[in-house]
Length: 109
Image (cartoon, rainbow, N blue to C red; front, side, top):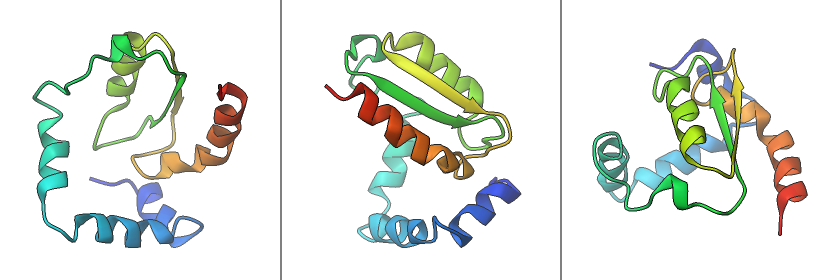
């Protein structure tokens, strides 16, 4: 399901990401199951109630959570800004992390 750009991302500056994902899933599949249930069950919070500044980074080629989901979430979260990068996938969207950190610095309360 990952794009070629997604597979390439952890080979470079994001090499540490595989270790984090492995450590996070070591205790069992509870987190992965919760992630999957979020597609079909209430989240326990309404995006419309979020008041903090929100930046959504999303890849236009994301095969895990399509770009339309980022657009849907941005429309429902009044404080959200969506950066939909057409050529990025699910992991390669992390290429926008440096500018996202600058955005966070500019929007920090």
